[in-house]
Length: 322
Image (cartoon, rainbow, N blue to C red; front, side, top):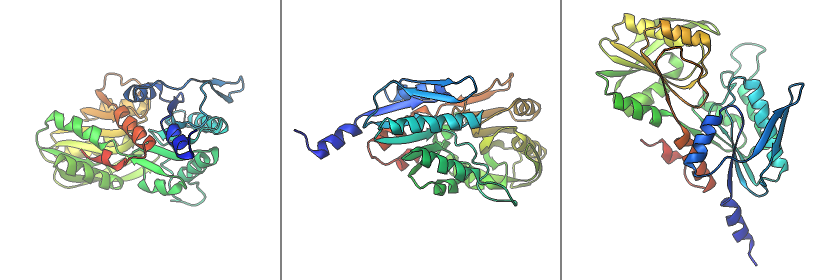
């Protein structure tokens, strides 16, 4: 006869990974890194568009991880995740961790004008209400979003993956640049890891898809510039910043962005810009680049290691070390 402690130890050894439809390729890579297979489930749509989820595996008492980026189409991917969480809670999973490589709706993290929502907080509330016990995510748009949750949040950074690749480029006189003032802290961290200087492009936003970059703080002349950011969609900020950096004498310009939720407009802007390469991760699926050089780095190993450490109640912060 086993005691309660033995039973607790047993369920901790039962790790199951499931995936929604948002980024199946990344989920499969995570499963390979964990030396396991994705859990079996059906995700279908009713004729009117409603989502149906059925789990085929027995997950009673299991430690469950659900991989789902709330990327395009964000409403559908978010609802799919909530329904999966609800299904697993009702199937008596012992613990449910939502693995969101990309946390959507994070741009709206404060009331910066009257009568607007704080959607990042709304999504946090929905995940908790659905039954999530913890969240694992990569490069939140704003660090304070962690405080919107009343459950543990493990916040990973893609910087170690990016920095490893950028070091291998062996750039001449490299310089890290923040394309706007909001990304200065992240750009400073990159500059410290790469051992380079730091410059900043100050900008004025004219609309949701249009920006007007207007000044550079720092000397970029003759440098191989690396612009770093957490998110780009229409590439307005990156391309406007690249234009003014070139005007100030930058030798070459690359951009390293964690989440590239690119649109066709963004790809067209990149092709017409002086950016030579866009380095991104696979937190969201990529659309066609139409010939523009885009390098996709995988965060599967990083997420898999974090999942294993969470499962084994080990430290996750050590993953941030290069």
